[in-house]
Amino acid sequence: MSATAAQTQMQALSELHQLLLPQTLANALKTPFYQRHWSGIDTAAIGPGGLAHLPLTDKTMIRQAGRDAQNRLGDTCHETFTSDASGIPFVTVRSVREQAFLHEFFARQRPAGQGENLPRAIRFKNIDQGHLSALPAAMHAHELGLYDHGVFSYARTLLGSRLEDQGVESRVTLLIGLERMLRAFTADCENHVRPSHTLHSIVSYSHYLTPAWRRRHETFWGCQVNDRFTPGEVFGGASRDNASGWWHWDPQLIPEVIGAHSGQVLREGVGLLALTALYPFQQAQPLVRYLTGDLVAVTHSLPGQEGRFAFQPLGRSRAGIRQPGSDDWLITPAALFEIMDELPSVARLPRFLDSPDVRDPYAIGHPRYQLQGRECAGRTEISIAWQASPRLQDAPSQAALIIDRLVAACPRLADALERGEAVISSQARARIGADLIAHAE
Image 1 (tube, helix red, strand yellow):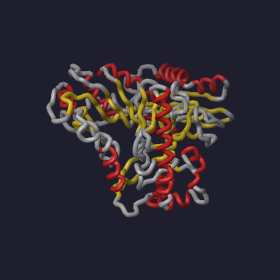
Image 2 (cartoon, one colour):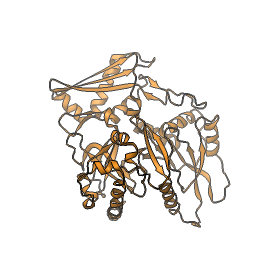
Image 3 (cartoon, rainbow, N blue to C red):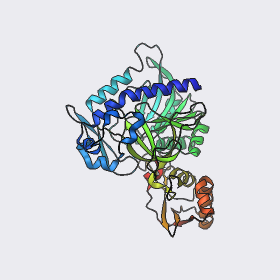
Image 4 (cartoon, one colour):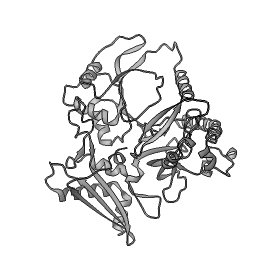
């Protein structure tokens, strides 16, 4: 993207946020929760750059408020049940009115009679999240369920077939699914003759996609992986720019990154993600300055895109170790997960165990480990416990390897260890009740 195009895009985004934020705040104030939460604050004077004048919200607050945090007046609502990545049940709502708006809005994005054939996609059905907005999409999708017998064989047949449907491309060019489903499919296909295919793109979403698995997909299929970051509580998400390696949000969301220690909005660095979901894209469940529980790196300094918000997801904040008295982090969840996910010596929790087509549920499952930290006598004591797989031969050398790789991946941890401000240990255990969702999301 040229610098001129980036500036034009940022200006349009700013104008959209200026237009929709007042409606968003007015909609939120129709709920008893936000009336109490913002008591004494003149919201009429708050623009996109002044959101920090409003207090943050989080999942616990919204859950405790229940219907007091929902705007159901004059509408019918459907419940969306999700535990997001924290494992805590959370029921949000989508109203009929907002679903109708979304359907009409996205239908308009591809005018009738455009003359171009729709791309053909294979899309594995989402089994991890509850009721999602069913939206018109500019593609024709073959919806496949992971628990349907023979699904992988059929998907390979589709990839190699030329099909005839009015207004649709004859060959499959898109492969879409949850990250773990794509793992399962690619791992299965690696044990067969690779089907002749015309894939242009693989779209992964939900779980954290490690660089190793990105390379594995792209090497096997010979096309790019496009990664989506999609918090379950809000409508919309972010897409990875493969040129820069940073993510950009959909325009109907206003993102912020908050320093975990200072509580201040960060323009550069690592902090806690907060999102404001804009009206009318999100109506029945207003979420303003909502802390998602995610840890992200943020920058506004990408070359040619100076001033534009960009971020990288780093996992769930509660699965990392923060540097005491600072907004910095000694260990990010993503750094440790990437290491543990590649070690065959670490036991794994199986995924899709009952699927007839998943060849090895353990191979694509989550590594069993736990990361803990505590302050003691002026220094941070860090421990990594992991469950050894039956293949492990030398636990001490593996424990040392984990520490060496983690120190190399986390410069602030290396500095703290060198200054004597932190100590770290790693040991294998017979059993780990792993906090798997926090590690993987």
